[in-house]
Length: 200
Image (cartoon, rainbow, N blue to C red; front, side, top):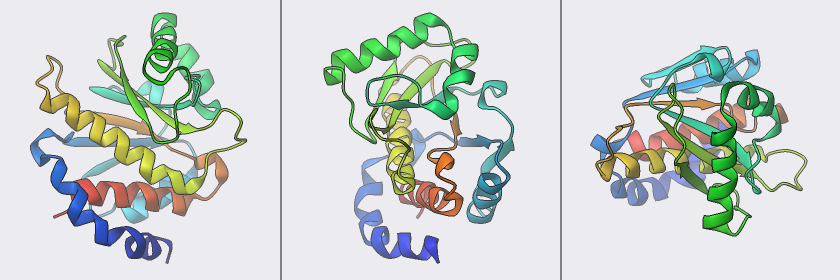
């Protein structure tokens, strides 16, 4: 029902927007990772016919060409991922995120804005900072998950289209807005974003 509602709202625009991204520029391997049984079940249900890998675990234990890191509007890592980010990423990378937000957005990103961060980690050569909510919001709106995921996919495609030395073939993304508990709505938003860009 939720997925059907998303398609009713977004399906008409899909044929318009997906043409602006070349299929050859999109990452060929998508890895969705979380520890919540509800999130994993929702992903598996909606992505069962798609070549997407759903992993039960921590994103910090997975390697990929690019990592989507959920951040707040001020550039700090969003609360559900903060401890893992502080343990897995260098201080140089965390400072680079702050600097990108300051330089490109005058210190304040809006939801679904993304930025590639020029401080690559060995395990994640490209880092995509994705704004999931304003710093004053108590939690991410579940319905924003699709916009954030699509923006991250488009950023990866733009990176590849520009002929960067490090091509993004695999993209790792933790759950977006899963802390709301609205797992199916979060998964539905992400699935519609996937279909928008990868669908026929």
